[in-house]
Image (cartoon, rainbow, N blue to C red; front, side, top):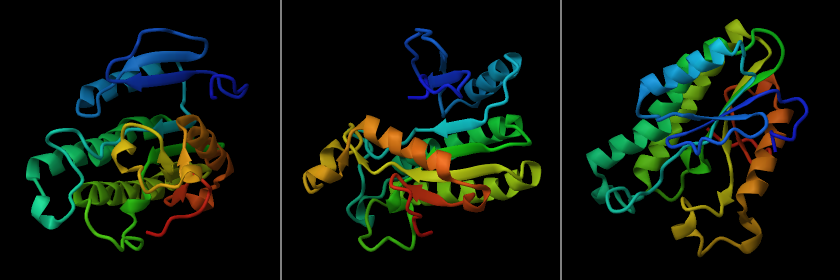
Length: 221
């Protein structure tokens, strides 16, 4: 979608194991959220190319990974090592990306720093309990984004820093939990991405620090 957007000059697409194919505007690069030097190398590459990123989109996250990480059904299932790993990926990794990329974003004109959050990270919306590590890590991410938004406003008044809830997307993350999701509420990755890009286009500096759903609705803190 971004590849076909005439406003987009270059895309740095990162993953732990990039496929190495350079297609059009897209440059695949290696990045591991558990490895801060890899984030520093990304920033150095962008700087060397003379680019000032006006959209930073963090699409990472972990809810489960067999056999060691599973969403807890009660407090009895909390495991320190699993919780630490969830926080490293869902909270600390995006924070480190902000550390290295926020200073590179333009000081004037609209720019957006966005990270995938989750509705279940809303403290006010939590009425079911459980999923302690995932909920807490996303709530912590939301607080990180709120703090970033305050600092960013001092440096770049037109910038926006937000969390995004992608909806229930038909991916491996949601696969074990789709049984009770109505078919019309299960989004494809392409549908979710298109909706999130519309939200990114529509938000203003007044929205900075908030978390928004794929449909544009604001999610309670």
